[in-house]
Length: 399
Image 1 (cartoon, rainbow, N blue to C red):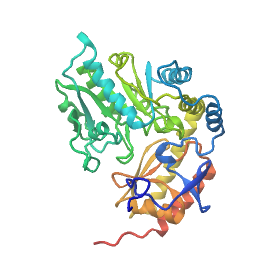
Image 2 (tube, rainbow, N blue to C red):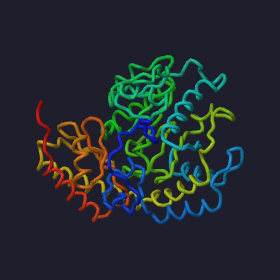
Image 3 (cartoon, rainbow, N blue to C red):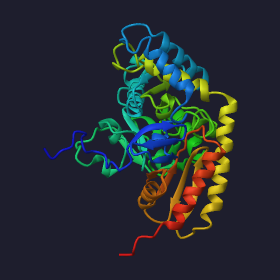
């Protein structure tokens, strides 16, 4: 056979981690990497957080899985924590961010189509934005306008219209009699760490109110304390109707959630949605441990402070290499280093030559997504490696 046992859909590199220690990954050959990728914004407590480990171990020894046909004391506790900490009134637990966005899309359509005389069955379209990333399922790739994600999977699902990101008037122009809601990332992650403007987010909220449609936020990457707020919508002075969250919420354990107001969830009745593993006791234990660690003012203030210091130093640093870097953007510890050329070669250079793990993104951007528990030692190590990487990087030869 020529195909590999692992289906070859990832361009896997030579880094092969077998162990994690706080903010470092250790390869099978013993090489240590400073992890400022965090599994793409997942390992927000690092790789050996005692509270998270203890919660998973204890729950694994007690009860790992039961059907959602039964009551869920564990799920009820985590759902209540999320309801108390956010805009929402109700939660559906999933295993991933893509599933959480799928649930959000279904919730928005059901709001209009499953509501009897109060609804409007003609409303099914969702407005989304250029360069968005909402997942890899058929619905979530259809919610993106990126051709590279569509290739080989036609036909796409109907019901999505695309507007330029941060362009309120373009979104307004797409609203029609079939519009059910607007789906947006407050900070585009895969699209290049691009925060929406306050006017845009507040304008979307006003548009949804004006037209009786739902504002749906995808906070899979920017949520769970990553920006110095528990969720990024808090930076904008608005609340959504529905929100998808995942990645950091499990700290490394597969977990996602769709959070909604009671009104927005009016169509999600018995039998309309489900998940075999969603909300299993093991995932709920991980989620509760993460909330214990991050959902408090002291932790959030520390993330905001570390993010501001990291950003300030990055802005000073890029002045030394104007031929390489253009700007720094983002919020908290979700930062992007926009380059003046395609970013992937530099990301590979940092990884392979300086043992610094970052993440490449769209718009020629390097994503800097460290564990939220970094300290001064890790910040200093990061700048040592970044400086060495910039100094030793050779620009590609012009064609």
